[in-house]
Image: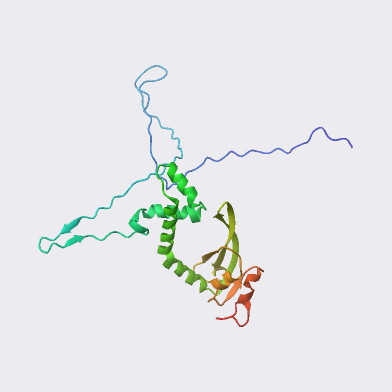
Length: 248
């Protein structure tokens, strides 16, 4: 059978692309170009405004670093010579070398954007602000300790659920000369499909391996319904004699 030399393609109408709109909450900076002083055609200077064309361009302001100097004056009493001074403000890290916005950025970059501390340190150095990797690691530990009470409240709320959804996933971890594989364990509480009014929440745990002792430790005080996959590390949780009770 001879092959056709031409193929008929059904026609279509190309839609005109929609112009990109920018979020309304962004501030607007109006730049007005000086109008002409004379007519381009005849040279007359009798010009009147008949409208304007506005071109909108999205722009970004580069990150700006600054040093905040908090001054606490010392005063001596003329009667007893005792020194008085206002208390130092709270800092999440020792000696307060990093402000709250910088700490929030480091934490978000590491845990929210998966940027290792060494990558962050390299970028900050390129911006003219060298920060030692060990200093950043200490800051992450200090912030984590400060947030621990909030973490325990989230944990208590999740573990108070009648039913939980459980799963785990791999997490790449930097090691000497290689990338190791660790585990992240997630327990989700969401009662909305069952008519529950309590807010949904998720609890994350970390481990260097996938041994079954980890979910057993995470759920040591939980008794309720657990929806999980067939990973045998959960099997001990379903034993009839388990305390504080079997997980269904």
